[in-house]
Length: 552
Image (cartoon, rainbow, N blue to C red; front, side):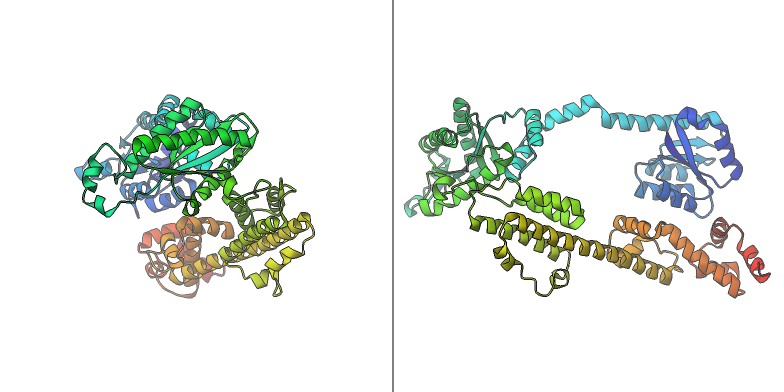
């Protein structure tokens, strides 16, 4: 069922339309009716209907003004205009507003139904278009190279869940089955040009050799082609561009790291020699640690990039394996971006249970052969993440943890990892409580400031949620949600409540006319003030004053 809002200033028209149309049969539900544009706009904000059916000529805000406001703020809502006017100015304005359908007065129920069914068909066609499986498949097929490239980039940059890796790899036709994974990064070396060559450089660049070419993209494209050709010949890896360098990702059946490494190095040495011989420039290759877990491919890439840094010491035009330059007895323990993000998110918006589960994951699988110093560095990285979260949340560390809190010295006191884990869990839980308290205080403070501003400016006719948000320097979407959460009403309803209470006070305590009171409480139109007063209070301003004078 689609939600419909009916707007017309004539009560008999509203009642007639509601009564004469079998709404269930045509798939619509009239969620509310309004008798003018201003009232309707408030309802649109609250109800978010699928369709608004509105008359043009109405008091306070006409149908075209309402349509313009809806188009600006809620572009997906459909619009049907009810009108007896066929003047050019109305038609011209309606065309600009992209009105979906028109029904000319006087109209029959069948004419209304016909317009509703046409709009319903439009809605269904739009839904079908967005859900068209064949169309989506075609878009997906065309986007496949980009999606594949994005997946590989993500695989290099962060740790992904195992199921996600295999699922996406299968979707993109990538074979990642295996027991050993290694990443290599191929970087083109800079070319040193002798003074004697400077004058001839332009001519050299035009030659068949790429050595002196300034077109790095062309060089890397040539390198990519050679690498792909040799990798395919050996069946030894996936080759792609990432961060403007050529990357080779090898997935081998063997769990033996030495075998995987030797096979990869042999293939890359062939690439290096071919590039030097045929392309006339040199490259340096960094090779990461062999990983036996597909979820840790990003670690191998990280090590490969790190290996490239050693060319400053070892020189260019060579293959540098991280295991050769950084001897490691066991696999390095890493506090990576994924772990940092998970812990930070948990501290800021998680629960105590989630903190314990996250900390368990951080300590899970740490091998016993890791040195004490490596353990301590890992704990320092976790602790630094916690303190950064405290800083980002504007927490006073002394207030949260106490004046004698010296975190980095505490790490040396632990006799077991379990003890360190419990200490970190307690730190995080303490922070979470303070963050939650501060957030609640911030919410309440913002709402109170909004209330104070509204109470001071409700008499201004142009006050609205955007003006309040501008004063508070926050977005309307953020403000709307916290205001409703704290006050259990929308801002529009709160503003109306303030204005009505002020109007009632003036009616009780002064002999001001309704027109004057309307201006005092922010209504430029006295008639709309009277309309709103009756709508909210149940009686007219005059009746309210008479009852007050009688003590009723």
